[in-house]
Image (tube, rainbow, N blue to C red; front, side, top):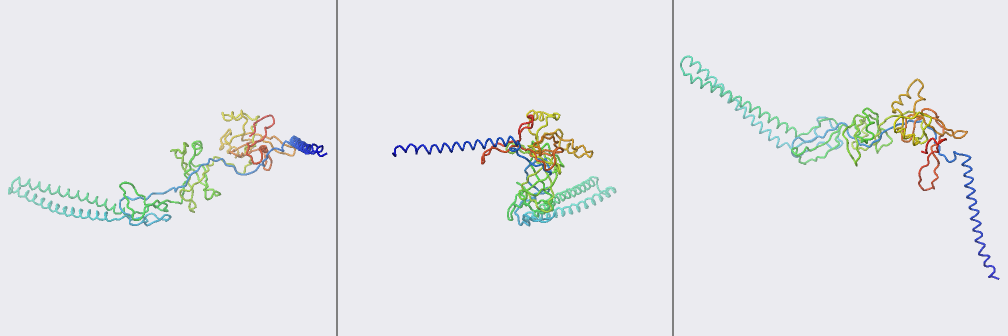
Length: 446
């Protein structure tokens, strides 16, 4: 009896598992069928939308740089010797003419004393030579009178005249020696004065490497006692890549942020584009200098900054994501190989894909004759309306890497298609799915 019932009990669980699997498959198939019907009934169900916004748009070139004082000077030593005393420290404010440091003056003072003694000796010799000259002149005059009376010979007169000329030459020689000695004394006095080092400008001590008691040798290298900088005006030294340097011009507006205060913008303008490049890791970079007011002392030398050079900007503009724009096949073909390649591939607009420069487009938009809405580059967007999706032509002005300025065709608050919802599994990164093609295959997905 027990042997006849065992096969029946072993088949019953298998039948139940098969039944559960069949039910699960039917449920999955039904859900997929319902999802497909819902998608077919509502084409916008799998699309991503963005709201048209209003705001400011800037097209910039970015670069990394550092801060330096616009005016600074390395105060060095002009004489060698031991530093007796340093009068300043880093951070001290100094005025022009303030004493910074003193070098031991013993050797230079001794040299000056020797020069003065030599000069006094030469002045005494000059007095002697001048007295001899007076005597020689008197003797020559007396012999001339006696020769007139036939009291002395002509030879005696000539000897007296020669002695007078020799005495005059001796006076001139000593006078020249005195001038040379005076020049030597002046130079040694200058060296003695150089033992006291004074500030050549108003500013702040930002570097002070020399220590008290240290011996400096100016004949081999100029020892920098301190660096004094005027921190009222700072200069950004931004390194711009060679691909962007042609768009940077003197006078262009610029701003920058610091690591310590990334929320604050410091405004300035380009003072100079230096033509001498530097190469870092095979990248050619050019220094661009931007001056900024720093009287509040919030900026310090060597700070790292991120600089932004404003190529063009639009204020209170209607803004959309760049990926929402599609080329308009009905618009006239653009000039240039870049535009031809883009139209052939049907790609999305690029930031620089405008027929005219950004400055020219801004001028057209600012015309007071009411024709600004007709300017710009034509594109198409898909707009969500109460009746469904609507393909609408728009005019686009300024573009950046992520956003575009719409001159006409859209209003703030409207919803536009920017792409498809991602179908990648949760937790796995997949390629971004862009917006569907426009009707008629007018462009690939972004």
